[in-house]
Image (cartoon, rainbow, N blue to C red):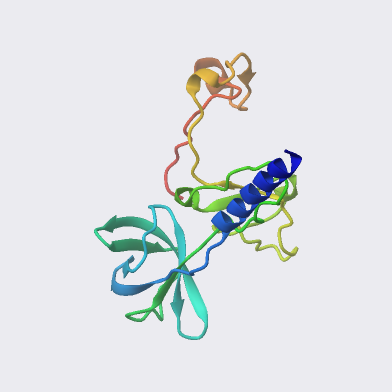
Length: 195
């Protein structure tokens, strides 16, 4: 009986390892560039997915899937598009490059392909660091050594599960503190003119 249980556990581990494997690296090709919108075919990615467009010289352009129509993807670049050529290769990113499941350990399902969106680093080690829009350090203090990344766009918290606002927040302006009191934990918009 013990042998059967161990065999079942072994087969379950094998099933998980096979499910994790990606035997074929998919890529598409660029068919059109119009302004800041690039059109690609050959890939099936959800809106919000990250990808790279290869350009001559071994460089690539970061981009994000903004929409689709039939088998065409509409991709928005995150950097300059100079050097892009017709037929350029489009390669999807996989920010879930986490470790494969450990065999013999409790199974935690990997993220769905739909959740492969831009992720941002979080943690106390970010305090005092200067990053660009993609989360790369600009301050010359070396790479980020953060152990945790979270999706930039996540599902909102149920408003009924939020903690009630019981304490006021001093914003430093007496007129706002008295007439437009702000609560600690409250959501609020900050609006300003240009400049």
